[in-house]
Amino acid sequence: MKKGWIAIVAGIVILAVGANAVTVTEQNEYKLIRQFGKITRVISKPGISLRIPFLETTSSLPKQTLLYDLSPSDVITADKKTMISDSYVLWRIEDPVKFAQTLNASIESGESRINTAVYNATKNAISSMNQDEVITSRDGELSDMVTKAVGDSMNQYGIGLMMFATKQLDLPDDNKEAVYERMISERDNIAATYTAEGSSEAKVIRNTTDKEMAIQISEAKKQAEILEAEGEQEYMRILAEAYSEEGRSEFYSFVRSLDALKNSMKGDNKTVILSEDSPIAQIFEGK
Image (cartoon, rainbow, N blue to C red):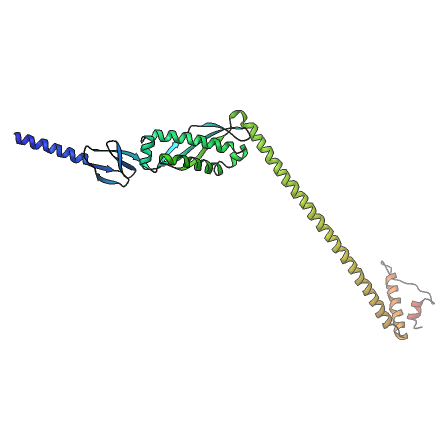
């Protein structure tokens, strides 16, 4: 019986020692191995590891990216306008040893440091910009400025800042309406300026076009008059040449007389009374 009890106790001791000698590291955690309170090594890869039973102890720190949501806070712009900043950050532990040594491996302490650093960086960044600049750069320049400033200050704690973003960057209720009206008025003035500049440019273009068209029309009329005069001159030359001989001249007179007679016969009355000495009557009589 005594030997049996000894065997049982020995088995229990072996199991206890074996269980204490094995540590399991998960995918999303760091395992810190300490000996007499001092960190001797860090296990970052998932799996089973061995440690010295009863001499080495373990603790865990999160390895995944963490979200910290800051409380809304008042900030003042360069033009002395109050705004309300509501933001959040994504962060993670990049150096677990440094994090454990400076912040006692406390996530709450890390978030407290982040909160202070983000508030100060946001306040400094916004205080260097006018209100309009803050509103237009909330997701660009402002985010970059805060991320860089906080990231630099958090390195000493083994913390890496992945991203800073504003959920809301708003105005206090008491002056929100006035600011909106001013911004609308400024943009209306800008629009009016663009409209006036466009109208002025359009007027210049119209005046230039009208002037060019007037010149072209005048030139076309001049050319038309020249061509018409040349045509008349050529017409008279051809007539003079055609009827320069006596026989042709008589024929021309005959044709002209017939044209005159035709033009005089208008309306329903087609009767023409001619005297004997009329040139037309003489033509018909063969004189």
